[in-house]
Amino acid sequence: MRKIPKKLIASRLAKKIQNLLKSHKLEIVIVTGSVGKTSTKVAIGKLLSTEHQVRFSEDSYNTDIGLPLSFFGLKVPTPLWDPTGWHRIFQKINSMSKNYPYDTVVLEMADDELEDMLKLLEFIKPKYSVITAVAPVHLERTISMDKIIHDNWKIASGASNIIYNADQPELAALGSKTKKATGFGLKNGDFRFGSLSRNLKGYLEAELSLPDGKFEITTKMIGKHNLGSLLAAASVASKMGMPGSKIAKGLSRIEGVNGRMKLLAGVNGSRIIDDSYNASPKAVCSALDALAEIPAGKRIAVLGSMVELGDASDSEHYMVGKYAAKKADMLVTIGKNAEVHTVSGAKDAGMSPDDIKIFKTPYEAGHFLKRIIGKKDLVLVKGSQNGIFTEEATRILLDPSLNPKDVLVRQSQDWKRKKRKAFGL
Image (spheres, rainbow, N blue to C red):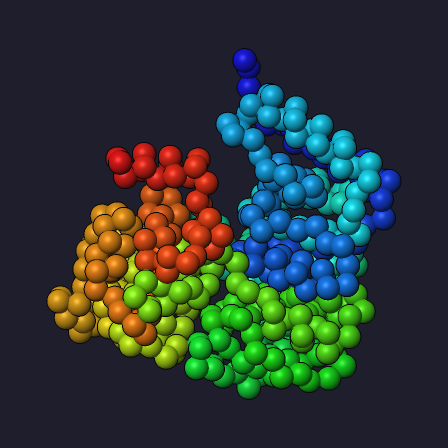
């Protein structure tokens, strides 16, 4: 059977969304940015759900095909271009559209697919837009910082309310030029966290500053770089009329998204910082900061190779190794670049070779650590997804009471097949 062309699928999905929006009055929130889109989208969705019927996806569906499916909580079929699978999806969309149960939809938009996003925005017309942060994440694509800023602001600018990360000077400069923009941040903006501290369990506590007052909250976040998702959620909720006391209460209940700085129980009384969804140099260093700050016995950093770094790959892996030597008691690497350059950086920074362990697969790393970690030990697991898949090390180290499908990324049968193929298993 012939495959269905991508453009035809995207066009049909767009038409379905247009029909839905014509027949239902919905508040639309879009989230864009280089990093943190999914975590921010989920935080917004969970906070707004305390007062609204909200549709949001915990998957990173941010393309011209994935985004329309997010309106209905549907996933692309496997295989992707299966005509029968798409026929069933369109039937479900038709059925759900008749009695659509939601009044608010939170969507994620890819900043590296500007033309596709702008086409969708012609009819989606969001009331609120959020820019999480801008950064040259995919260094091998050699996209200038100016273009990244331009594309994200272009996506966000069509909304009635633009909410942006005011700790980034480039965004703050653009935000100051329009009255419909509001900033959030740890240092700047109308919505801020101050007086940060960490409790004995490792979670961050802070004073939340909102336009209608200040509130002390204990979050369920462990990475300072993850607090932006909560501030963005607070900003949107406040704009939609939610009182500050309810915002603070709601934020204190929001947990991290699977694979993104989530604190999990491990075997033998250990704990795991599972940050295995993906990796970039800045994010790895932020995760290592959390590893060093959380009360623990031995601190172990499991670092997989990072991809899409282009010509900077060798130097960035080396830098991460030097940083890890300052933050961890043991370094465990997965993948060739980490083996060569991250290990070299760690040794040059003074880490003993005895405290460095090198593995080719996450399975080997996981089984090794399972034998040696004990009570109060803390393990950070971080790495890129393509060909590294460090979540499989986390899976092996999980406390038996936890179901990997509930707390980890990429645990479907399809992903398991891809991993076995990637490692020749």
